[in-house]
Amino acid sequence: MQHEHGTSPCSPPYADAVYTGKLNGWAAAMKMTLQIVARRQPHTFEVLPRRWVVERTFAWISKHRRTVRDYECLPASHEAMILWAMTALMARRLAQPAHLSNAH
Image (cartoon, rainbow, N blue to C red; front, side):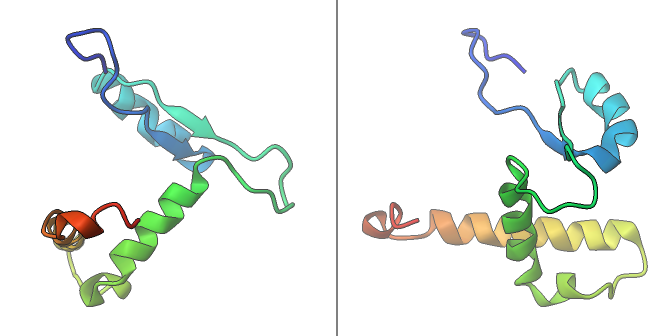
């Protein structure tokens, strides 16, 4: 994605190697370049680049009761709960006093 001034406003999306086939078509339709984070040696522990971002986001989502367990019958309902959790997180951050906003 390019900004009108030729700069990219967002970093490219990262994906685990498991989702390569499913996300390639979506990324192409959205005119994005997808960066696949793959393991170099299977069955060994290694810190993968940018993986912490995904794990941190899952932790934020899991702080909301309705997203901890699979309570919803429809995937769309669960998606709505995830959107609600992330909206609450953003609203809480935007509502912080200015002197606390740089604490993270």
